[in-house]
Length: 323
Length: 303
Image 1 (cartoon, rainbow over the protein chains, first blue to last red):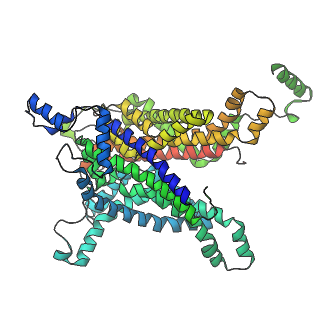
Image 2 (image 1 turned 180 degrees about the vertical axis):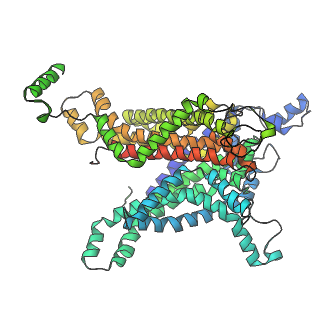
């Protein structure tokens, strides 16, 4: 186990180096002179040359790469070419909003999808199972932004029940309005984005749970449990369910990168001030330092998430042995 | 081979025809017979035929130009003249949706084709050569896979010049890695199966084994995944266009029509409703057809 972990960690190093090279290369293919973003519009050629020298833009590309990499390894993603702010600081300011939204989404997805998957499996080919299968197809085909717009139209504009943008009402917090009023306000803001994303993704988790459960209830040890006369409830909950949940647990590792990003469209529709909105703004403003940082962090988390998923597999399933 | 066939037919006829030696069902016919049984897949197929017909005959079906603006008639609700109403500059939404089917469907198709070609090429090369070729190709695949797909897509699209062709290319370029892995895995496992061994034992050449035994079997999941990928690529394009980074104006794609209606949700909900329905139906149809193909192509599933 320990050698396995060490080997996997070592394997990650070339992968991450590869990711950083690809990332850096893509950003340097970008057209336009970064100096344009750094200087005043009526800057003289001399000033431009000075800025170029100051930012090290005259150096060969590999020198620039190693300089960037050595800063990144120290957690420093440089300064934005657009507003001069520290990139790490900007991202950290946005991160809590994205984490908060994605955490709620994940809770909803698992809380709803796991029971659906179990019932679908236990009543395979029943009406419930068929409806859930159909819903799964619908959930995968419908564009999330379209569902978002429909919800905004009905619940936000027509009925005026829910706020359509932001995290909460500005100026309304625990000190000014008390705990409950604040709680209701925050919940009202978050409910639509959560529903939109959860609807699109929970069907996948439910299908996964369904097939995992189907596989387990055909196992010999479930038959044994039934044969020795255990009540059906005990067979399902204690023998089958525990084992069927194992693969689901490992899915959590894969969710790690999703916690961080991936909601560009949803954050844009609901003006949610997280990483997604930041990244789309950075892309439109050609703020490549931020784009590069977000890509790098996202990819790193993906690598870590895969590693975590594999580890969880070994931890929860003693049958799997790694050499 | 031909001689044998002639002899067989002669023999068959002399014994009174099909009753004794029925003509074996061709593979294509068997797939089609099994596919037909999947009702939703058939429904999906009809929807797709309808959508492609709209795209092909767009100039005849669209009642008006997709780019002619008519500001006095902006944000008009659906009527006989404007079946789906008009948008914020008075363009006919119906005509834009019909022309949009051309763009959205071609983006989906070309992007999926790029992804499938790259995926099969990389996956098959890695599996065939093995060794360091396999190592390098698979590490590279892992690197591309590690990037958050949609964000990578956004990044590259924002760097390149905005054109329909670039959108197709980039969607394809960011979505091949999972296919490459699948193809590689398929080929590696097929290589070890009994029928390959049997073919080898019978003295079949490498080329024959690869082209007659391994590739046809590896193609089934590729075809299924390619079908679903067209739907996925249409979704990606619509998301890009919705964010304003997709197909450039004045060309309509379903996503860009939606994007235009985003700010007029209350005054003109029809601008967003109709293209949304088209995206949804098309992607759903591709997914059901893919599902039907999966069942029909799997030789292990008995009818």
